[in-house]
Image 1: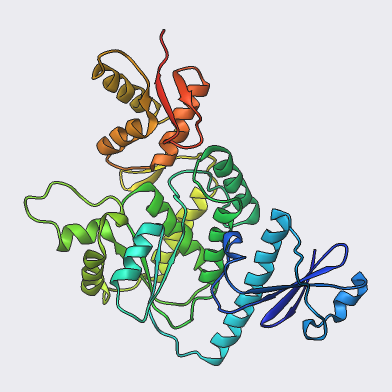
Image 2 (image 1 turned 60 degrees about the vertical axis):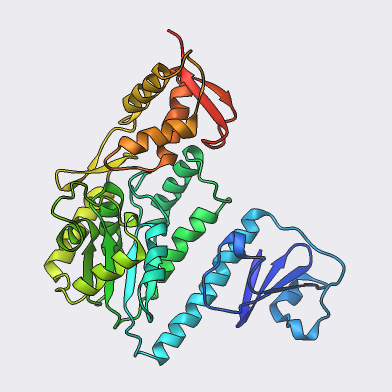
Length: 374
């Protein structure tokens, strides 16, 4: 497939003689699932491939009453080309307007990002990595080869419900958003004391290493204890998404004037990322004040013990909904790594003969398990 740009239009040639024309209508990056929902599409037939180089949609009559289907790989290519053109326009606009100083908020949690968007006053920009950095490979994640390895592992092991390429598109779009950050905007990075968000802050600071923006850290675990926890309260905040929009707004107002990270502090975080990016594991926790890689099977015994306990509550040993097993485990976990990882380990225990299965393991709602008789 070939492409040509004529902003706000972009042309795609598909063999043998079809031209797809897409009109960009906003500057928000696309994913594969959004390709047919946003923007405007028209299709044309040309006589020969050579005509594509001089093709102008205003001089041709669009096809009517017929349509062409595309391979998913082709639509993903289209998304990449469209997003690149959008980024070029963003950069051009920023060069003309260097007065953009609205704060930018970065977070490694989609739900926490939603709370920040809802709670914080305008103007603002909220950018999230919709990825759970406590699980999956992060080896050389700043590179294409590392991103491909992570996507491959997640696609093979985690039942996420994402359409194909959707997770990859979201990750790539976040990288583009970080590249686009206005030079004068203050940056606030939100995180809590758990393996995923602590990994995320180090990755983000590595990506921002060439940016001169002032960067402020918003550790929600510490800020909650300082400003919101009562004297009698025992629990602590382990994930940023445990806080509601009102609480996040309150913490921002209390801490927005704190000192930004020094250059030495930024370099230290970047060095810590370089160490993490050489690791080959797929599970990380926050232990003793550091991101710690633990064995992939770290929670297997907890899963088995939980199922044993649920069996004891039954009149006769029987299958238990996987969702119930996971819910029981999450209820007792201090630092959650997400239900999708636990579901992956339950499937592994099925495949290795520890558990029996009833149903189809396409999601935790679709099957039940029980301990295999010994």
